[in-house]
Length: 291
Image: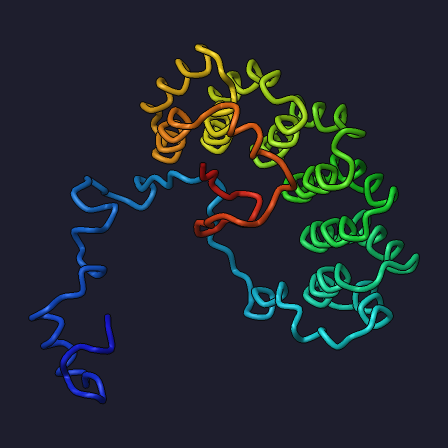
């Protein structure tokens, strides 16, 4: 609702606001715009959520602020390492992230490596391997390889990001094995992205297989990368995906059909960046491809 509602410089009081809303309703509040309008819903279990892994959690305000490193921005490496070793789980998460920006020293690398492989909080492990990647030595890659077997899928997904950033070519076999064997869509998607950077059109058959995966996230990214495959089989599959049940897959396939394969491959590189739109419940490993 705009502050400029015509009710005076002070805005609307409660009575004036209700009157104004009745006369000039905010289109964003129109119930006709609700995605559930005009559907037959008898119970909550009948409501379908089209995006995977969107969850309602019970995080405390302190936990939600754990990614904010401002409270420790004046802390030195020794204090952060102390928090990482002995602090609460929130303190450990914040310290892990903040250690990404300190000078690279043996103590920092050792502390992050230990946290990434032994901490009982999966977020700490994920943040620690992310920070360790910023210090980029051989130990960071070794830790990332170890974390490809972590019980938490988001830690494994971050480990693939780390290997992609640190030593993609040297660890091509590890990444390929992860794509073949992991059972989580985010991990497999990150592995497919990394391998496409290495192999380009040689990934065609793999991408065609992924475009038929039960995970809409994998189908979405397969459709995205098929834009870089200059072959009739790729174009035919993209046309089929324009009828996919998932809207995001359909939209991605439509954009991919309009892309120039050679130009797409030339521009598809770099690291797995946190540079795209996020949906509720998502993080940077779940971003939607945008051609």
